Amino acid sequence: MRRSLIVVGVGLVLAVSGGVGVATTSEPAAAPPTTTAPRVVPGSGQDLATSIAALQDTLRRVPGDYASWANLAVGYVEQARLTGNATYYQKADDAVAKSFDVEPDDNFSALAARAAVSAARHDFHDALTSADAALAINPRDLGALAIRVDALNELGRYDEQLKALRTADRLQPSTAVSARYSYAFELRGDLDRAGALLRRTAAAGSRSDKAYALTLYADILRKQDRLGLAQRQLDVALEASPDYLPALVSTARLQTARGDLEGAVTTWRDVVARQPLPEYLTELGELLLHLGRPAEADAQFAVVRTTIRLLDASGVRTDLETALFEADHGSPEKALEQARAEWRQRTSVHVADALAWALHRVGRDREALGVTRKATRLDSPEARFWIHRGTIEAALGMDAAARTHLRRGLDLDPGLSPWQRAEARETLRTVGTGR
Image 1 (cartoon, rainbow, N blue to C red):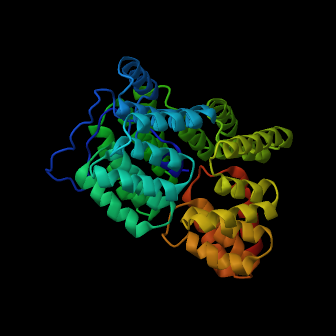
Image 2 (tube, one colour; image 1 turned 90 degrees about the vertical axis):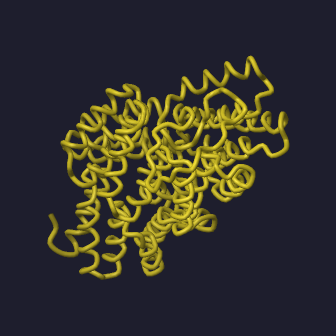
């Protein structure tokens, strides 16, 4: 899921690298913060270990550097994502609090860091409030500009998201902004434009920027069934940054697209050993289900439940992830409860899809139909959205629409979970000529 690289994953960039703007101007960049330590900005692909080490070194020498405390908080959020160790969220909270203790007034760095922590915890209302507060003090703060775009996207406020992107690109053209612009194009079905922007970003940025942008570009190419070109991008990405985990995730999905399912199992096991996100564990479990290894699949699903509990205990909202998982592999009633809770918080296309699917799983297909139409309102090239819509339409006897949308979903991403694909093909078989 592309969004996990941008929203759930809070990446890092030293200073502002890879200045690739979509609509750049000649306005000067913002004045640098008082600290000389690396600047941490959400949503790029830079070297986390180097960033955190530099920040910690600065704080040992200058413990009153409030900007570095704020930047370190964002680094700890990334540590939580990369390691699956939710205790880093408390470290992030503590670092933000320390920054405010040192400088309680007009501390836009700490406000931007708090926005990043809230976004990582999926509290997008608070993320937006904190980002806006930071920007009221420093309208050019790249971290706050980036998180503001993410929050509006996750809240389903898509027109405002585009306006925020234009502002961010005008004030701070960068890898972080380019990646978000690309995702905005992708979300609206314009894969060619999204891919072209990522190519430009990779060409202009650092080695880490290159790995980040080319991994996202490989995912787009996979969705377009351009598998050989996708592999070449991943080869270059891994050459630029050999330990870059998102490229490994993309590799697993590309192996699935090519039919190398055993190879994909091996790669997914490597991924979840290093980053046990619920969505990754679920993809591995579904792959094992498809291969006829239910006991191994159940072991992965058990880890999903444990991981969700740990994230919940650390204040990370997991209603969306829980709803999707429970709808397919647990309790549909719980799925509906979780999806409704998330829908009350935000009305994005991803939440609409989860709510529609949960409604379908409990047999409320007429209600699900209206919601699944909201999930597909941007024409997003998300295979699952269209498969869910087609399945709901099939349940309602809307055979022609079901065939159209099931086929569309099956055509969109050859890297889709084979278990999900088999379910969709079986439904398609019941409403007409399958494939």
